[in-house]
Amino acid sequence: MARVLLVHARAGAPPEYTIPKVAAVADTCVLAVTPLSATARSVADTCCETVVDISDSRPHADQLVEHIVAAAHRVGADAVLTFSEFAVIAVAEACQRLGLPGPGPNVRRARDKRAMREVWQRAGVPVPTWLPADSIEELRSAWHRLTPPVLLKSAWSAAAVGQVIIRSEDELPAAWESSGAALAGGNESWFSELRLSAAGQQPAPGFLVDEIIPSSIRSWYDDDRYGDHISVEGVVVEGRYHPVCITSKAPTTPPFTERANFTPCVLAPALQRRIEEIARRAVDALELGTCATHTEMKLLDGERVCLLESAARFGGVLLTREVEHVHGVDMIGAYTRAALGEDPGLPDTMLVQPTAHAAGSVALYAADSRGRPWSTLPPFVPDRIDWASLLSPGTKAEVFDGLSLPSGSPMPVYDAANGYLNSAGLVFLTAPDPATLLADAHAIMDGLEHALIRAGQ
Picture (cartoon, rainbow, N blue to C red):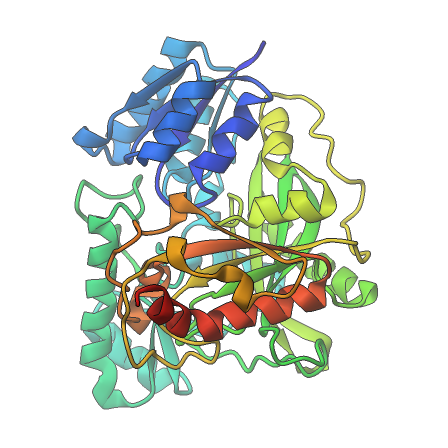
């Protein structure tokens, strides 16, 4: 049987879900660059040949690549994979050295948002108007050259961490400090790029400033409970892009923190094909090798779109589980087979037809579905909530421990610059149809505060 080295780092699809999927395809050895939770370690110990934790040494940069190459030689790996945003460059470089299929030499285009934007501009793919900024002086210059308000973001972060909207010039210093502080906090909790920095440091150059995209759902959805952005999930196999399906979203919490994903996409097939064509142009322009892809874009009036980013990994939270539940496509297994040079068994064309099932992931923040912060902060006790009281008959909710704080933890105050790091937990929902899923996801977002209050009484 083939053997896979799976490099674990924080961010991306959770290891409790991905490790058994990889192990079902090939003998699996885990190299943990960041700590595995107790649950994930138990899962890995059960279904993997070996589990080696090197997180105490906190390897970065060239040291990390050397660790991966050495581990691959030690276990005789036929493929090296990661599902982490922050380890994908290191894994790509290790695969090149080992002569194994991987994301390829252009992988930085799928991590550095500035390089990504430059590639897409040359390819004629629609992107926001933007400028680089690596100092408060460059931020001020960008402010005067762009049309406010603007969005300050890190070129290397993920999940909206470090994003700050700036509406007036006197906000520039505070925005710069707030974004930097959020990124530093992410670094402390292993939520930062591993390849291009020394331990404890952020990679540089690191920032860009966007004009706010004039997004709208008017020509796409007739229900404002859907958000104005989508993502296309797929796999690139030896340079050929295979889009699998589109995932819908709930409206973001300010500034642009994702709240919930919904599968299947309910847009008309013709509209989905239009999105597919833009996604294909965007991914093809990045010129990747063999990797997962998660391509995000904003919806605009006139059935137009604007690209946000495309990562060389799957979407985070439980998005891949949603796709498997609804469409029957095991994307983790498909990617593993592709990396081993086998037939991934992916659909011939992107899946756009309605299905009899629906599934979604809902992040639990101290803010309602409209982004309004809670007036109280009850303890986070998901195991005591009567979830059925929030849901429709036939809908099931599962609190995913691997992406949740321990029961009894303080509920985090929502800080706009911290993005997904504000999350107390994640709920995986299954529902009989998309309309029920949408309603129940919003019921959780709007009812969680009082449900936690009741649960704590």
